[in-house]
Amino acid sequence: MKITAALAAVAILGCGAAFAATGTATPAAPSATPVKHTSVKACNKQADGKKLTGADRTAFVKSCHAGKSAS
Image 1 (cartoon, helix red, strand yellow):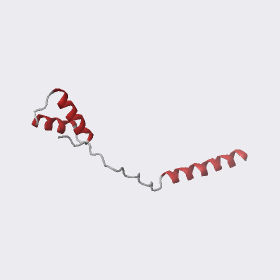
Image 2 (cartoon, rainbow, N blue to C red; image 1 turned 120 degrees about the vertical axis):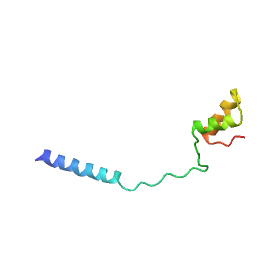
Image 3 (cartoon, helix red, strand yellow; image 1 turned 90 degrees about the vertical axis):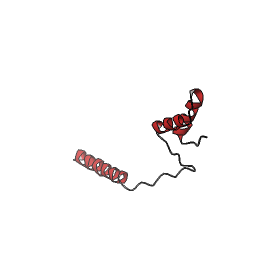
Image 4 (cartoon, rainbow, N blue to C red; image 1 turned 135 degrees about the horizontal axis):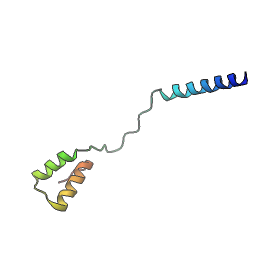
């Protein structure tokens, strides 16, 4: 009888935890500056258009992919 009562208590607590987990979650606070990630392929096309090579190209593609505005 004690085992049955213990299993019933565990089942009730487990269902309560599962129900609480499926409730509506509060959205995360938005960051001050949203980051827009651009694909590396698109950044490489932009670098081709600017005829960048070497370290300048690498720096441009990295900043472009991170969403930073590069000139």
